[in-house]
Amino acid sequence: MAIRVMLVDDQVLLRTGFRMVLAAQPDMEVVAEAGDGAEAIEILRSTAVDVVLMDVRMPRLDGVEATRRICAQPEPPKVLILTTFDLDEYAFSGLKAGASGFMLKDVPPAELLSAIRSVHSGDAVVAPSTTRRLLDRFSPMLPSSEKEPKNKHVEKLTEREREVMLLVAQGLSNGEIAARLVLSEATVKTHVGRILTKLSLRDRVQVVVLAYETGLVRAGGGAG
Image 1 (tube, helix red, strand yellow):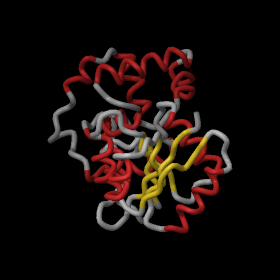
Image 2: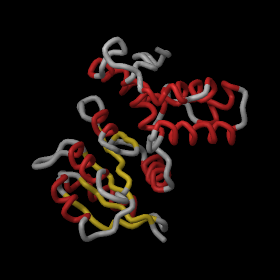
Image 3: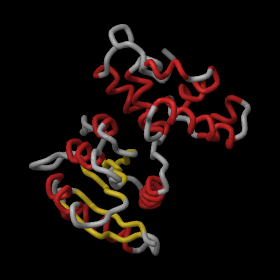
Image 4: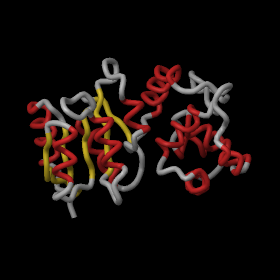
């Protein structure tokens, strides 16, 4: 079955461009479009969607609040935030709101398509270099580790799971973590799964957010 995609952006030209790229894929179908977050939420009440490509800055209801409301619904579609990054100061909030990842609006088509497939399959799209840049920029907005107590659930992690969590928070892939810790990639994947379960997190994006919020990782990607 084709991946059902909704495009949410107030710029018609951008939606047209994305639609043309997606329409050329045999495993994707654009089933809906919306010009703002409020319209997107309304459409989702009657349209089955697997992945939402969500702009951030839009009239009426912005992408962050729309993402929060969508992700709060039972069995919601995956949300992939589209951001201009250098101008957009809401991408981090979008991830906290429940988005499964973010991409730059000028991303090459092949990367966008790969991201949609990854998100649809249950993975989070966290590009290491972009993640570090984004979180380093917005980390001053987060509670400091001196004022914010560390998440009590983190104490449930084994020493190895904590190591893996810190590397995930620094943006490393499973393969990179496996090489760093001299483990098999399958073992790393198992550790990540246990971390998500123990901390009641949805995906790797939430691991990154939690690590920065609790002070486990400082700006610059170092351990806290």
